[in-house]
Length: 477
Image 1 (cartoon, rainbow, N blue to C red):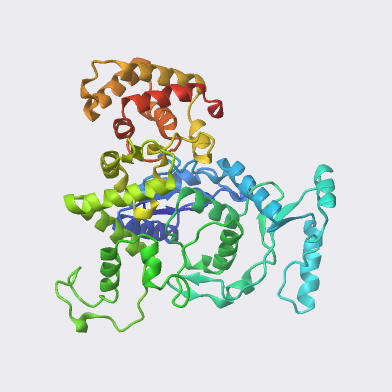
Image 2 (cartoon, rainbow, N blue to C red):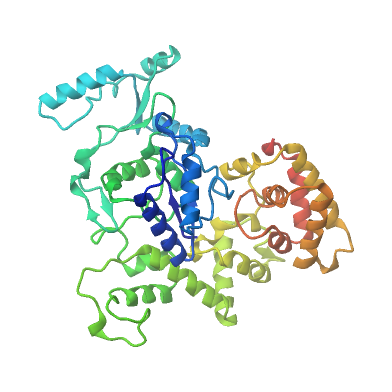
């Protein structure tokens, strides 16, 4: 799903520049059929202003910019205040330290100021002499145990060609404005904006970043952090990346979507939103950029068109079955009596397909339809924190009994929905906490089709087995 974010800092009132950035995120998300998040980047605790969040929220509401998820609108990507996500940043900081992509720096503020002054007088553009880079593991550990304050710096080599932006292209001068081995985690254990932003964009599944031009100089640093953490990062370049047709074939893009994508490039002079007939005179004279976001949007639309046609839907089901066979060779849902279970694939495909931009993402998007859920994964652990263990077990046991009843007519979506509603009301629970508990037990993920659809697709027996197994699974404690 296309997902954008507006991520202001709660350090004062919402300005027109911030409102414009929010507007662009809103328009672009709606254009691509996606959603957008309001994320509060409050890692600089010294600059927080009380009431800023309420001011930002009121300004967005006044302007009619309706974000989909945020601090006051819970969703699968929360929490939405960065100060509530410190464990996640510390986890990735430890990974960078362990991999050698980062190191601890114990230099005091005064020492750093002296170092910067010395380097400046020497004619160097560097802002730090990397004095702590070569401290031994033993020395670093000793100083940490002694309680010495430290920051965590990223260890990078300068690459003047690393800054690439979809609008401005390569930004060669960006590196000169970046600090030497920029700080990722400050002495107060709060991450810097750059580190937290990259980690959050990755874990929240942000597909597009729209922000002010003032952040362009930060692009090289962000790309380095992406690389050091082995995160996938979309970038545009005319000379690099995937330009061969075979690349798009291997990546699972629909051929109709790629052709549609190419056909639309350059159509900027016509008055109608979509040209009815090809007219060479209507193409633009300016440089054109292939927008990967548009390809994802078109690809999703073509998948929906194929799903609506019985013949092409059957072909999609066969492709899905082949992928499932490769991804989950031991699953009893891929095989049935020694043969492919195409019926099950056709049953689950409509529920999964509406969330896919690329068909190759199907196995990773819904593994729980083929194998038992993994309650030890980070997403499952985060979802688990949203409900109490005692309530969780009560919900699962009671719902198990409701699904067991023989008078549940034909196990249809409507009968399942009514059974769940009756169970929730009898327990006196709100729908989110009740459904999140069931979703955790059935899938081990925080996102996906509705719980009713999941139960209907898995079937009565498999659903009941997962509910009762989750009660005794030690990984959810």
